[in-house]
Amino acid sequence: MRFPSRLLAANMVFALLLWGLLLVGVALVAAGVAVFGTLTESTWEKGVQLARWYALFVGVALVREYLPMYVAHGMTRRQFGAQAAVTATLFAPFLAVLVAVGYLLEAGAYGLAGLSQTLDRAHMFAEPTHVPLVLAEYMIELAAWLVAGSVIGAAFYRWDGGGLLAVPVGVGLVVLAESAIGTELRLPFVSRLALGLDVPQSPAVTAGLGLAAFLFGLALTWLVIRDVPLRNRPA
Amino acid sequence: MRIDVRDLVLRYGETTALDGLTFTLESGKIYGLLGRNGSGKSSLTSVLAAFRRQTSGEALVDGRPVFENADLTRRIGLVRDEGEAITIGTVEDALYFAEGLRPNWDAGYARSLLETFGIPPKANVKAMSKGQRSALGVVVGLASRTPLTMFDEAHLGMDVPSRQAFHDALLADYMAHPRTFVLASHLIEEAAPLFEEVLIIDRGRLVVQEDAGTLLSRGVSVTGPVARVDAFTAGLTVLGARDLGPTRSAMVYGDLDDTRRREAAEAGLELGPVAMQELFVHLTGGPR
Image 1 (cartoon, chains in turn brown, green):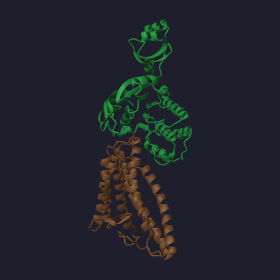
Image 2: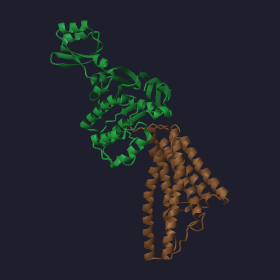
Image 3: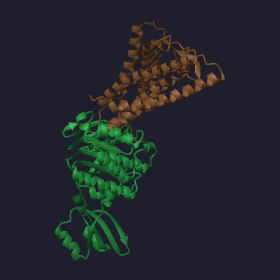
Image 4: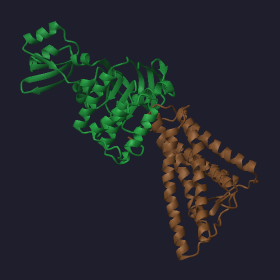
């Protein structure tokens, strides 16, 4: 199998661009709060929640945009599946690195300004500068959101409206990963709804459940796309 | 690449798109694939390019089943109106992926084709006009240099000069890099000069597969006084007739040997060619 260098590079370059924009946006918000109010919490922690939705989007796009293009360029679904799996496996850690670097930049800025980088949500890490734990948490979380996107994207691509049935499966994958890292799935506008499982917290359980969610998501995606026809133009 | 199709059936739910197609295409020719809307052209090319799996029967390329066969699919290209090969970011992005995925990609040729069609490399593909997107599909299809290249209505939205440029480029590239082309098109008269062999399908079944020259030679227009034309064409397959006052022009399908041609001349009848489009219309059942 060829290494998916172009697939990975295209997504990484775009992610870097978005990360830069997010950094600027978060810095402006933090500066505004500091000037007009009191800044007591990490702003990056809140802003970086967008990364989960971006990972979901990348998962959807892998199937919706890239699978048809790769098949149209003579790749088999099996070849694309392997390349997409490698891409997902490397892209989630890449996003986690960007998140961790954001925390470090924020820590430096807050330190210079004499501010406290307090965290608002439950995390595997106590301090944003605990880089290995930051990486582990976001890697597990973003990998799960990415494969949730690929499962849902594959189902909608193959079955149109029938893809709705895959949404609970995607939510399940995310809840499993969030539970593994000791948090809950909270959705925008329905903050009272928190989905989570009571999972004993230990490094082995966290890593095992996170890996299971990721692999299960990949396997489900493969089951849907392994012989999927490319869509025809609606008549 | 040689194509063998045997008893090919493709169904979408209750609809039968291909209904037991059987034919063989030898390698190294330009084939015209003609059919009316819904005749099964797109379904056939989709199966041959492994875009979808057939319901039953065989679609063989170089003697092997094509679906999920990486060794074959990397040498097969299908450009169609859906545009899945190009609809990603900008024109440069589309070429970036094509270059990475197509083993015979010719980047210099692709750039020259972009200039020919006036396609800006920085343009967003989804924001381009229909004609420009079609032209970009043509660029990718030709520059991929796949041994089996298929264009399914690749000209949609292109204006007349662009279509002419497409046909000229295809012919020039075919001469320089001989390979198998399959062109599915509704613009029969425009594309007909390219065809070496023609397949006409209707309702998922093969109607005609013939050398283009032979097919054209089977169509003859017989023009003259109504009574003499009727007498001459009695017993022949008459596809249609038009009257202008006392004069009738009848289209006849079938071989006319030298004796029959002499009889026509002696009867004062004029014999002439029939356009491929006329033959197509009548071979597929006339107006519906």
